[in-house]
Length: 402
Figure 1: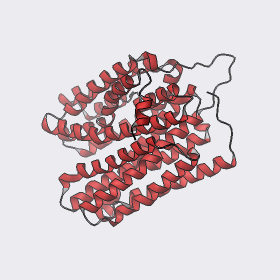
Figure 2: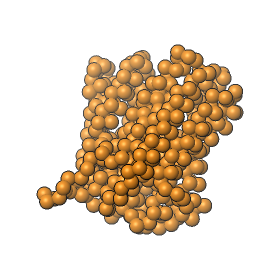
Figure 3: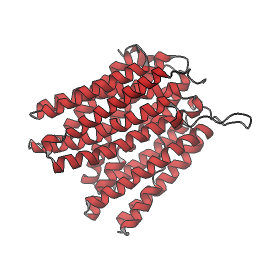
Figure 4: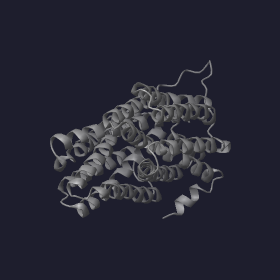
């Protein structure tokens, strides 16, 4: 099964940028948890912590696609290094404000300043796309591998942040996160041999279409919004459900089971040859997710819940992998980072909205109904995927030249 993965790493420089990219991607899943814990533990207010975190998500949703556009135009190193410097400045300011008891409004300013986070997942995928631009099978395997890396980060990051903040000091998670981010970005951008060349529009060239005007990207964006809502609401519902079983300390383990299912499915999916159109695979993945999530409503105990979460994890991976494949196919290389960052931002916004929706459901209806929120979101993801695929089938157009 690992033959295809050995083949993609045979290209010079691929292992180096993957390792460096992982060091920079892990903090992405640590920052939100670290910020909430730091503010809640030091200021005694989860309401303030949630508001600051939500402000940071909103600022990142605006900044990330703009950074992606700059990366396409000027190159990964020229944009990411200054961006991570701005990010580190904002985080350092927040650490100082929390430590020295600055007014609460300063935390909102700091979290906006720290929103200049380079999208490492988009930049690593862009490198794979350029390296294997003429090898569809290798791009499929690389995309699956990237999804596995994402899942590993989402599995390890929050747990690491929680351990650091609760066992050392409240600022420890954010401090370690910013150190990892800066070190990883600098190491990643030092790998210049595999960096895609920047694409600038010459005066005589017509400007490229904005990514949001490309039907395939809009389909993936809306589907990822709903998929993010599945992830965010499912995490909240799982914590509430496990606590209702009287085993609250097992929440992280149960969520790790879900992530491990996604990792396994991603590895197998990448090792198998891609069959059928990407649009059909995308719709099939969304259908599998919509069919698997309702199983969680029938869980009657911790063991059954863990099994169902594992199945749900296996169902979500193909949707994510094929969605990014659709985006990479639909966009010219001159817009890869902007397009991929845009759909990732949609996923991030969906996770935040899903967490809020899941929390409302648990609080007002009860933990037994907590999984109604991810079930609804999964159904919406299926509708979005099917609608987009059908529309694409009616108005098919040739792929843009690379």
